[in-house]
Length: 230
Image (tube, rainbow, N blue to C red; front, side, top):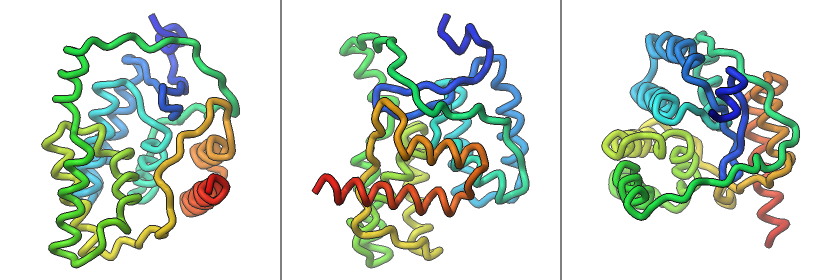
């Protein structure tokens, strides 16, 4: 029995890549599924429907949602006048859980890889659509693809992930999605101890700042880190 089962409530944990996740015990998931179902009945775009499905699949299969996914879910709910369950406050600082990851056998790893979408294949298809249909430079959109990968693509079965990647590429072309800054670096893993980005995510999830402020400050932090490491 893990800690979340002992407590009976949702709790924040960090995985091996130092990303925050909210673990939801099985008996708490029905209220989350109900909220997702009600949100799904709103007039969502095709892209929003598929991303919402990715969040539900992640919750069903892994029993958890990342801080980034929860931030996207909150924005989507606010946009359509829906609500989601209250999220516990993100810890200000939290050391390593002390739990060692279980060793994965070669066979288990192979089976897992077969069930997961291939990031580079999806990127090639995404880039090809931008180049051929939109006459755009795909390299300028790599960071946008990385963000979409972390928020939805990696949680979907391969076939669904491919559909979302294609849809996202066509949204970029047809709906004038803002071009991300050219110097925006790929996502940076936060340290084990909470830093500025942890605090920023916490403030956003607690409603202390709006999404535009959160997004702007996150980009500024990433840019400052890139310049500092140059």
